[in-house]
Image (cartoon, rainbow, N blue to C red; front, top):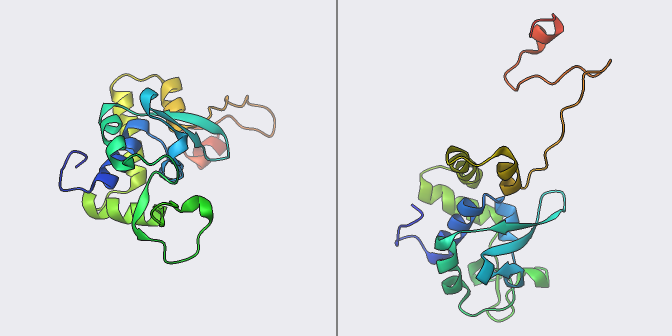
Length: 177
């Protein structure tokens, strides 16, 4: 799907960037043109929780991005097809064209329709799964996903040890692990 020429350029760039960077959709949709470092295939994003981080992409995105930007130096990277019909914050409008930043809702609808029901969140997880299958280390996967690792809490009175996500609460209470 990411290589089909029948898919509009904007969607191909967005989906490729999401898959190659494993970034959250909202992080990529918030990108402005000045956030991009095209020669180094990276961009500055604001992660969930407000941390500023760098995402990177690969050759396919690097080849498509200049075609999408068409020389633009300002404004949102991903724009709607039409001019904004409602008043939006100036940072969400491309001043040259009057077009608005592509919303998460619209991006999700476009991807779900083109993919036969998959979500942008599933696209992100498929990127992380492929990286893991290709041998990426856990620290690399955490860095790609923008997730901060938290050390395991020691077992102390009042704080039982962590269980696996599939663990049973009742088995832990009865002392069976």
